[in-house]
Image (cartoon, rainbow, N blue to C red; front, side):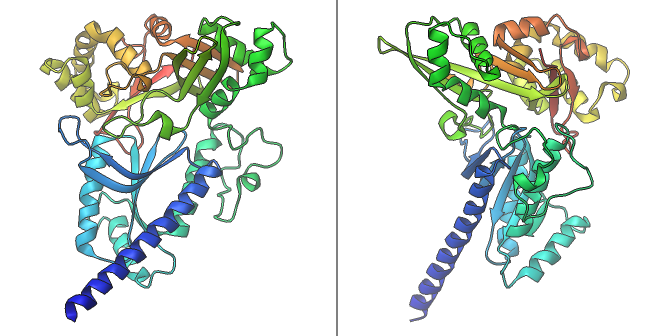
Length: 417
């Protein structure tokens, strides 16, 4: 009888846990539909590139913002310190593997009877009474507010929003973005706009018939297809998508360079696939690459221990001016043979661990908003142009680190051409 009672109790807890996860999933899907995040991945798994098991570590949910920063989210229905320790372990390793993960959050429902226990544990993490790879323990409504605030902070640099206004969980995008601000749900998601433009049948028909449309997006369409060197008459239709579930992720769980996957159908029944990386900013340079120093070394030359040490030196100090005497010059010399390889990897993904060709970008599409400059280059051409410019350590890039990731990763920024 006791075994039966225990079995019934466990089933009830399991069902409650599944309902809790579904409620959270619905909240995240609403955030996706409303443009606050660019992707939601359920059952997110990743493993070290040095391990055979590429799904060793786990988070129930991963959300990605349009700047490719990520949060991993754990959910629970009861306060169990042993269970939290499992989540701490997974979160710690996922952050080490994927440096785009900026936060790990444990969430519980607003009506959870153990709210006080969760708040007390969260306070221990906030005050550093305990060390944790979980950044916050918060309820569902607080998570939603945090997501909106992250989105809001991301768009502040693009449009003139009052920095003293923070959106509440009841605000919609239309409420936040008022007073004629040039912004919509897809404005931040540049790749979605490019996919929509390329999929336009009316643009394709006009282009095939040499018509000029008074439409800035049609001019973008023309520039894209002309750069692809396509002929007008043979194309039957073009389908393009920015959906992450169709493009997929790298075996490690990281983002591929491809933001838009284009399928071009011709009248002979052939399908040509083209992959695009998309960059949009009001600034003259954007972040293009972020990995740990050891991953840099593994891709550039896994047997060059001097290069590995110098890369780790930079990662530790985080900028050139704080490097010990002679290290900057030594790193410049060590990188010299790998400049083209570094550029192709940073811009197009050449050297990533994936064996799926759609994960490598063939072209880069960029839009500098203040100059209204729209450009399309092949990855090869883009890298050749970049390599004529001088940045840090003889490369064309500005070297830095992502927020809260000093000592853990190297971030490269490149000019928008």
